Length: 146
Image (tube, rainbow, N blue to C red; front, side, top):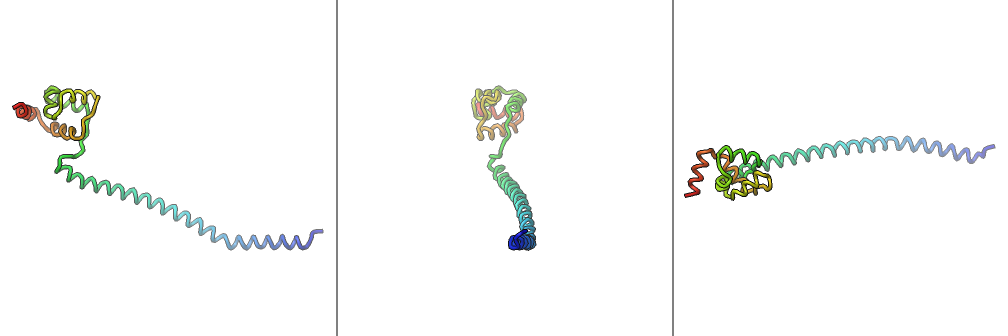
C-alpha cells in the first residue's frame, strides 16, 4: 500500500511543475522574440556599416580625384604589353622611350620583360608619354637632345 505522504508529495510536485510551466512560458516566448529581434538588428547594423564604408570610400575617391587631377598624381594602370605596344606604335627605341620617361633604356627593357615594375613616380611619367602622339614624341625628343 502506497504511503499517503509520498503520494501527496508527488501530487504537490506535479501541480508545482504545471504552475511553474504556466508562469515561465510567456518569459520563454519573450526571450526567443528578443533574440530574434537582436539578430535582425545585428544584420541591419552590418548592412548599414557596409553602406557607410562604401559611401565613405566613394566620397574619399571623389575628393581625391579632384586633388589628383590638379596634382597629376592620379592612379595609373600599368601593363608591360601595352608599354611595348605603345613604344612600337611611336616607333621609338627603348633608349629614346626611356629618355621621354626619364629612365634608361635598360629599365624600359626590364619593364617590358616584366622583370621589374616602374615606381609610382615613373608611372606618372609613363602616363604622360602615353598621351603623346608620334609627332609630339619626336618633338619632345628633339627638345631633350638640344
